[in-house]
Image 1 (cartoon, rainbow, N blue to C red):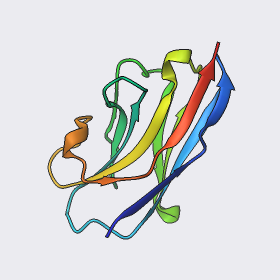
Image 2 (cartoon, rainbow, N blue to C red):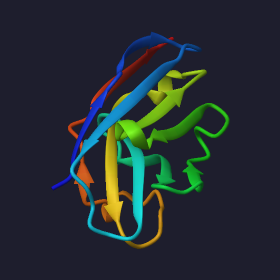
Image 3 (cartoon, rainbow, N blue to C red):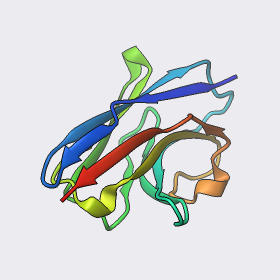
Length: 125
Protein backbone atom coordinates (compact mmCIF):
# COMPACT_ATOMS: atom_id res chain seq x y z
CA UNK A 1 0.00 0.00 0.00
CA UNK A 2 1.16 3.55 -0.70
CA UNK A 3 2.78 5.42 2.19
CA UNK A 4 3.56 9.14 2.15
CA UNK A 5 5.80 11.04 4.57
CA UNK A 6 6.13 14.83 4.48
CA UNK A 7 9.10 16.85 5.71
CA UNK A 8 10.61 20.30 5.34
CA UNK A 9 8.10 22.36 7.28
CA UNK A 10 9.11 24.94 9.83
CA UNK A 11 8.90 28.58 10.82
CA UNK A 12 9.91 31.35 8.46
CA UNK A 13 9.41 35.09 8.19
CA UNK A 14 7.18 36.61 5.54
CA UNK A 15 8.96 36.76 2.20
CA UNK A 16 11.07 33.73 2.97
CA UNK A 17 11.16 30.31 1.35
CA UNK A 18 10.72 26.66 2.27
CA UNK A 19 10.84 23.43 0.30
CA UNK A 20 8.56 20.63 1.35
CA UNK A 21 9.32 17.03 0.47
CA UNK A 22 7.05 14.00 0.30
CA UNK A 23 8.74 10.61 0.31
CA UNK A 24 6.59 7.91 -1.24
CA UNK A 25 6.83 4.16 -0.87
CA UNK A 26 4.79 1.40 -2.42
CA UNK A 27 2.84 2.02 -5.60
CA UNK A 28 -0.61 2.75 -6.94
CA UNK A 29 -1.98 -0.01 -9.15
CA UNK A 30 -3.39 2.28 -11.81
CA UNK A 31 -2.45 3.49 -15.27
CA UNK A 32 -2.91 7.10 -14.12
CA UNK A 33 -1.56 8.68 -10.93
CA UNK A 34 -1.95 12.14 -9.44
CA UNK A 35 0.09 13.61 -6.60
CA UNK A 36 -0.83 16.78 -4.78
CA UNK A 37 -0.21 19.15 -1.91
CA UNK A 38 -3.03 20.35 0.32
CA UNK A 39 -3.14 22.55 3.39
CA UNK A 40 -5.42 23.21 6.31
CA UNK A 41 -5.22 26.02 8.85
CA UNK A 42 -6.94 25.85 12.26
CA UNK A 43 -10.65 26.57 11.90
CA UNK A 44 -10.50 26.55 8.11
CA UNK A 45 -11.40 24.00 5.44
CA UNK A 46 -8.79 21.93 3.66
CA UNK A 47 -7.75 23.41 0.35
CA UNK A 48 -5.77 22.23 -2.63
CA UNK A 49 -2.43 23.91 -3.25
CA UNK A 50 -0.88 22.15 -6.24
CA UNK A 51 -1.01 18.84 -8.09
CA UNK A 52 1.01 17.03 -10.73
CA UNK A 53 0.35 14.07 -13.00
CA UNK A 54 2.82 11.33 -12.17
CA UNK A 55 5.03 10.64 -15.17
CA UNK A 56 3.55 13.56 -17.06
CA UNK A 57 3.98 17.28 -17.46
CA UNK A 58 0.61 18.61 -16.31
CA UNK A 59 0.59 20.74 -13.17
CA UNK A 60 -2.26 22.49 -11.39
CA UNK A 61 -2.01 25.41 -8.96
CA UNK A 62 -4.50 27.20 -6.79
CA UNK A 63 -4.71 30.87 -7.75
CA UNK A 64 -3.49 31.90 -4.30
CA UNK A 65 -0.06 30.33 -4.89
CA UNK A 66 0.51 30.77 -8.63
CA UNK A 67 3.84 32.43 -9.29
CA UNK A 68 5.08 31.67 -5.78
CA UNK A 69 4.91 27.88 -5.38
CA UNK A 70 6.26 25.18 -7.69
CA UNK A 71 5.37 21.50 -7.55
CA UNK A 72 7.80 18.94 -8.93
CA UNK A 73 8.82 15.32 -8.54
CA UNK A 74 11.95 13.21 -8.70
CA UNK A 75 10.82 9.80 -9.90
CA UNK A 76 14.22 8.22 -9.21
CA UNK A 77 13.94 9.20 -5.55
CA UNK A 78 10.17 8.62 -5.30
CA UNK A 79 9.87 12.12 -3.90
CA UNK A 80 7.40 14.94 -4.47
CA UNK A 81 8.42 18.53 -3.77
CA UNK A 82 6.74 21.85 -3.15
CA UNK A 83 9.04 24.86 -3.45
CA UNK A 84 7.41 27.77 -1.64
CA UNK A 85 8.76 31.27 -2.24
CA UNK A 86 7.56 34.70 -1.15
CA UNK A 87 5.71 33.15 1.75
CA UNK A 88 2.90 35.09 3.39
CA UNK A 89 1.35 34.76 6.87
CA UNK A 90 -1.81 33.42 5.22
CA UNK A 91 0.23 30.45 3.98
CA UNK A 92 0.47 29.23 7.58
CA UNK A 93 -1.10 25.78 7.76
CA UNK A 94 -0.51 22.07 8.07
CA UNK A 95 0.59 20.86 4.66
CA UNK A 96 -0.32 17.39 3.44
CA UNK A 97 0.93 15.27 0.58
CA UNK A 98 -1.67 13.11 -1.14
CA UNK A 99 -1.98 10.62 -3.98
CA UNK A 100 -4.86 9.62 -6.24
CA UNK A 101 -5.22 6.59 -8.49
CA UNK A 102 -7.07 6.89 -11.75
CA UNK A 103 -9.39 9.60 -12.96
CA UNK A 104 -8.29 13.12 -13.71
CA UNK A 105 -5.82 15.18 -11.70
CA UNK A 106 -7.42 17.97 -9.69
CA UNK A 107 -7.36 19.87 -6.41
CA UNK A 108 -10.53 18.26 -5.08
CA UNK A 109 -9.11 16.75 -1.90
CA UNK A 110 -11.91 14.26 -1.21
CA UNK A 111 -10.91 12.25 -4.29
CA UNK A 112 -7.39 11.55 -2.98
CA UNK A 113 -7.17 8.20 -1.22
CA UNK A 114 -3.65 8.26 0.18
CA UNK A 115 -2.43 10.87 2.67
CA UNK A 116 0.67 11.68 4.67
CA UNK A 117 0.70 12.83 8.29
CA UNK A 118 1.40 16.45 7.43
CA UNK A 119 4.14 18.98 8.10
CA UNK A 120 3.56 22.34 9.77
CA UNK A 121 4.42 25.58 8.00
CA UNK A 122 4.32 28.79 10.02
CA UNK A 123 4.94 32.18 8.41
CA UNK A 124 5.38 35.13 10.73
CA UNK A 125 4.91 38.78 9.82
